[in-house]
Length: 277
Ligand SMILES: [Zn+2]
Image (cartoon, rainbow, N blue to C red):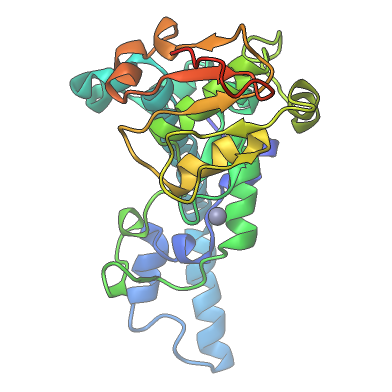
């Protein structure tokens, strides 16, 4: 199985490419690419050419692993799979991808959005986030600050995308408030959300100090990205007095209840109206 043409951003950045097994092998060879004479360079080129197909295969494997890691993160945060540690551990994402049920269409759906694991401030479809990762975090060095040394494995460099339960809950609430959580093709644009929330402000009433302010719907997504807290509640304020959002009706319900996320909507023009939880 190979990633689609649109999945090009799943390819490794330089530091990740540098840790592919065959690249490490060649890099560690004390006799490879050290002599700059023409004869030595010709010999090095032959060695490199003989390994090229293997390196390309490892790059393709890396791309599949990227999609596998993203799929696992999405399903863990949005479905019942995340409730069962044993099932999550046993989940074979590569096999699931090979089954054909999780193609580009799945990763483009609004309910499959992920965030950048490096800055946590970019959120969207997998391919957009991976493109952001390449552009904003080109990763030319193996240095890992947390380890205070160079990474020696791809795992030590860490995942490229992530999806926290808090972000998944907040995003789910935004989609439900906008009544865009069940579109036919699963695709949702910013313009659709802007139209749905036109004239409305959102407030995270129980958010951490400094985050309690009215703002656009995008704030509801960016706040949990910046302020992860498993016991917070999110409250939405806007002229949506009939909206009562409780994610317990959807898949992953008990896991979400465990995270104690209850979303409510109140009228922004009637501050005294009771919040509904
Ligand atoms: Zn980023």
